[in-house]
Length: 258
Image 1 (cartoon, rainbow, N blue to C red):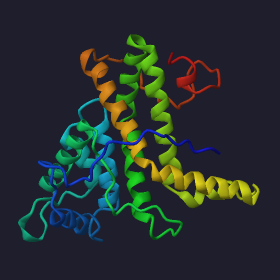
Image 2 (image 1 turned 180 degrees about the vertical axis):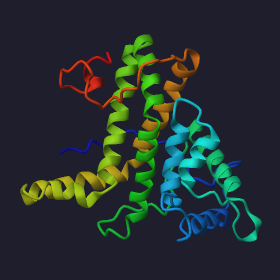
Image 3 (image 1 turned 45 degrees about the vertical axis):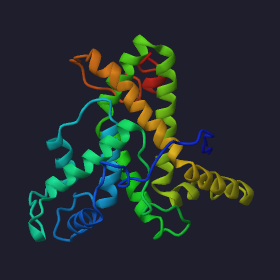
Image 4 (image 1 turned 120 degrees about the horizontal axis):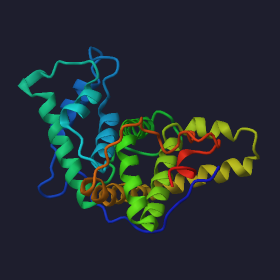
């Protein structure tokens, strides 16, 4: 199992500190308290999952309706009012507006809450942030697939790079979402191989900004193809990692997608 690292330094700034893009700490704490309250619906996302989810939604090539992503974040919870008269819906929309602006400008960066650690409790917030990204990536896969299909027909070279970058980014988050599970896969390998993999994980986190930049660039680049000539499909959507319907046994992205 190999984790790829990049060398290009990301041009990023800390969220919430960019002029005109401030989300107050008190508002973030209000959301943390509300979303994490035991009275919330079981499928309500917590603050960390929500921030990862909204980052991935903001990167999507297609604009996503506020009502749609709000429904995912809040799950079956329909109560918006919290202590102090603040509306959760408005706070979430404000948070999304900040994240959306940062992703459009390519300046999104993880907050200090998201620390990589070999201690499961210390890195739990980061893993939950990764959960949010993967949830959005799966939820919005049809939109990404439409955009990639259009990129392939218009600019195959760009398609190859963007598709490759997306696979690398999503693949890394699938490992980082549960580091212990990833290490368990290597339990039969030598101690040297396990140590090497642990170092790769640490190195990948140190350049996590590169992966975020690649994801933002992919979304911004594919948005051009998506909005300029949307395709209307009558057949069911096929995920790029699904088995190809032709029966070859290969993944769709490696077979008939092209």
